[in-house]
Image (cartoon, rainbow, N blue to C red):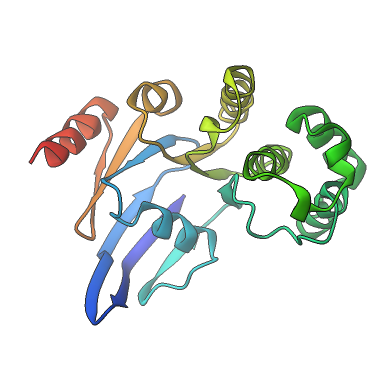
Length: 218
């Protein structure tokens, strides 16, 4: 369970106040894959980062009774001068998982070949994303935070990404951000719509998608 209590986040950009979370109170239940929907700029990625603990809210708090991933596929925490292998081993130690097992999983999954042994600074953005997704999926969490990552790579890699994600969802939950409604329908069973700083939860995914599409049309 992840509970948001009076969560508020606001920025001041060029003298204008932007509110991405306006006193939100909501519960994301355990073991459920929930689509987080909203127009571009609504604050979905900011909300994920606050849930992950990598961004501080302006006020309010987030309570969880399980483990939460960083936003899956996020490559910003990699050290650019370390190799893919070294970064993977470092993350394994931070999260207390078997380093060799994680390296083996990522080596097989990310399809980086000899680049896995080269510094991250030499990687393309796609290679960084494949590495980040592999590391994320190689560690078990109670809730995965997912931000558009299954769009990375060619069709074969995207299909493999969806398959491993579906496998993880047999034992875990997720908060899933994607602009692809077919993918949302494949991956999720509930929905939440973020609009103008307010978050509305839906037990029925179809109702969430319909509400989201009405907001886009309006």
